[in-house]
Image 1 (spheres, rainbow, N blue to C red):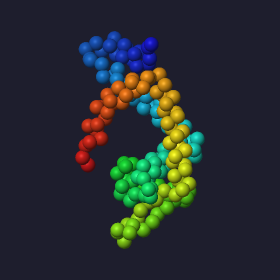
Image 2 (tube, rainbow, N blue to C red):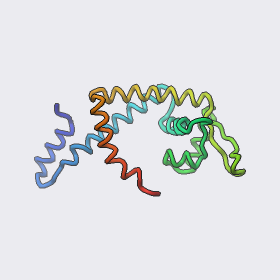
Image 3 (cartoon, rainbow, N blue to C red):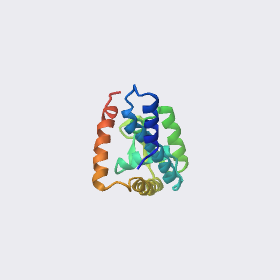
Length: 165
């Protein structure tokens, strides 16, 4: 079975035989897959009336466990956005009654962001929808192949995730 990356690599090998284009075999496919995954995720979230950033914040709170709350700083760490962006996102989610701000009992100046019941339901529904779309993307692979691919990708991604700062 030939794909677009095979055609791209063959063209580069023809045009630049002096270069080792082997990395394109893997990383161009990862890049293309990322675009397909992004589309599937946007579709899954839209089916539940969410933007990708809303899903990120809601599910960070949902994963926190009871009482489903985090500080804005913890949300920043998990979603990799600036504090101004996070403030805006919290405001918008609070306006939709998906989260609420509460005073932090351990810090009089601080606040906690808590998932509301409707926020929890929205996060749970969107996650179930996302997983259905992602299963479709992986349908060509057996369970063993999926585990092997996950392990190989972990090796590539881990150094980026473990950079201090």
